Length: 147
Image (cartoon, rainbow, N blue to C red; front, side, top):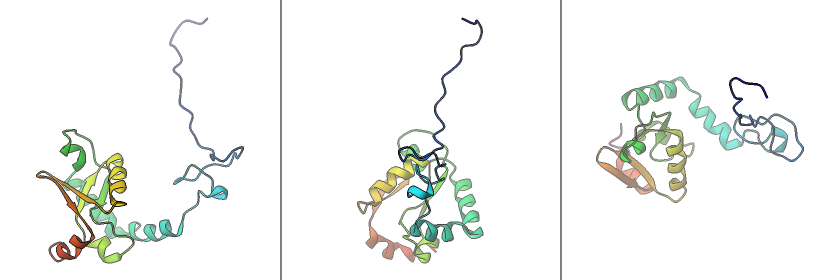
């Protein structure tokens, strides 16, 4: 047995497709290769058109500069850097809702959890004063005040 620094175990990189016996590299957005369903969906392509714009990059940078910490984590008493700018009201590829919305900074984990609530029709807005829950009907009422 050799003396010195112990070798620490490492986690597998998981760069291959999850399909049984497939050795193709997985795609960036999936655990599968493009041959096994890991390619970009039509919804993904439509979302990319909205997010891959200079105006969004500037708005995202402005939001993260203004609110660099995750709003949901702060509400729970934790300090976590935000990495995502969340549309409080899901835009569903509607250009108007994409541009005119309430925005909040969230970490990746909290953004994923918020997405689960959105599928139930609950849109959480985390503020210093607490959580406000909105529904689709609230967007029409509030959209005039968001300009």
